[in-house]
Amino acid sequence: MSHPEDPTQNGFNSAPAGEVRNAEKSDIEHLVRLWFSGWQDAHAAILPAELSRYRTPESFRQRLIDSLALTRVSGPPDSPSGLCMIKQDELYQLYVAPAARGTGTAAALLADGERRIAASASSTAWLACAIGNERAARFYEKHGWHRAGQMTNQLPTPDGTFDLEVWRYEKRL
Image (cartoon, rainbow, N blue to C red):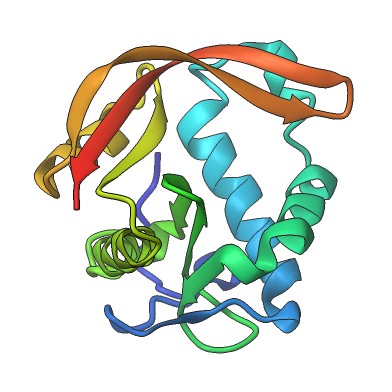
């Protein structure tokens, strides 16, 4: 895994931490690239190859379109450096560009997601973390999440659901 010194490599900006905003339609194509690249980096080597065939730019684009109102981003319009998507009491997706790692962007997006979940009257948030994604696990634990155990996550695909055993993390809000 590389950590580029140029913060604009691959077209991803590393905006200052804390600048979290609602995702806009104009962000979608940039977010598709960010999410696809992040998924490949974090999951391609540790998850079943069968799942990889469903995780295409087109699938990420459709999921973003369907969940745009639940998605917040960090970074300037048309060039966000990270995204956080929630679904009810679940922190559903969290990705940041490699150039934004270590800048506080992920922490700002995580805190924003937690606040949004808490505002929905949920007292406990949860998330699914791929078994073997040690970088993500360390990040969540550093920010007060605890591994509650393993669970089977039913991932949507065009062919139905794909059952994947994951680590379940939880945090009291």
